[in-house]
Length: 311
Image (cartoon, rainbow, N blue to C red; front, side, top):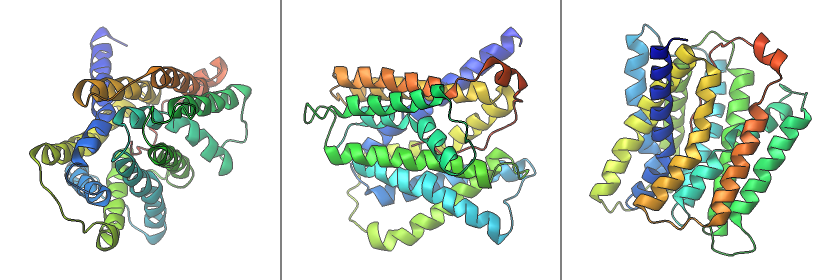
């Protein structure tokens, strides 16, 4: 790899890490005006508005057929509707820093989901250890021995359930949507479209609360949709196709750093030792589950992986 390519890879990686790591800050700010369902619906629609023209400008088109859209709807439910609403709801009373750190454990739950779906029946000691590390890290962050250290219990539960759902969506997409010859960016655009439809259905039941407009909340929505959802997918697609999935996967390690830093600097959120120690333990777990034996790493090809949504 040339030095120029290496520099561009680093630029793309840092840009995506900053964008996706800042999601939790903007979710917190958008929550000052919008309910969770309102926020997620706006984010999905704005993200789809960015992605769909990009897909069609490259000669692509949305997939056809009831079966594929059925799978896309399930992926949208698991990967967008459920986790994004839960994170938005949890941040109403919880910390954006904690949300970002818990979200970084998504790869651990992807491993569990892949095992449940029969995709990976070879759970090595390293992978099992990684999952256990992640669980321990989450417990440390929750700090049940120190009530209120990381936010309300309900917010922690919402973050964990949302992350498990997100991990399950990766596994589901790997089983039912990958390998169909559909570009990852097209899958992402289609998934956002399906998720927008799901939230539109939910709006009459959970999205009609009064909106108290604030400038900072409107700016947060404008960033969450087009940038954190739409443009971020384009960057992720470029990372996968130009730099390989191994490089793209390392963006996960930047989430907790960015979310904790922004939470402390912008929102003045308390970040005691449980958050820092839990983040380190959780990231160590993610590194373990993503570690491949040398022989397997050499044999694997850098084929694009399906894009999926972050928290």
